[in-house]
Image (cartoon, rainbow, N blue to C red; front, side, top):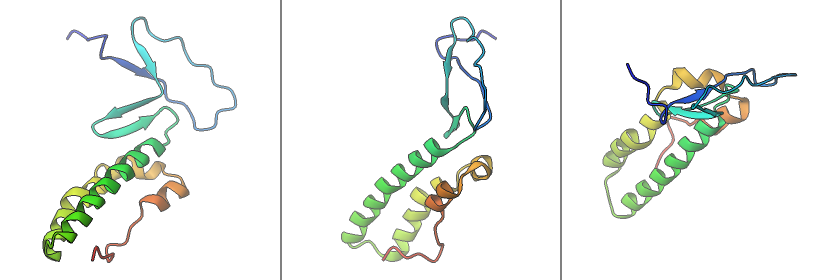
Length: 120
């Protein structure tokens, strides 16, 4: 297998609050990054998922605006519920086991939602 060095990134994982951390020298012709997106989940080198949560919330906010526009157009509530589940709920639930255990209390509070919440 031939590795495309133009697409290859290197990420050095570290503890969230190291007292002393020295980055190793980067590999030749490989860009060293602190944040990367893999299969739709944004990973950071310190195992924090704040960037991922911010991306999800931004996307869901845009999609909620779309739902508001559809509601104003007279779409029945049952159809809005289907659209909500497919556009927003599915995005919130995607890969939850991979990143939810690393959330801070603040980030966890930002993504918690009530299943009983109503759109109308």
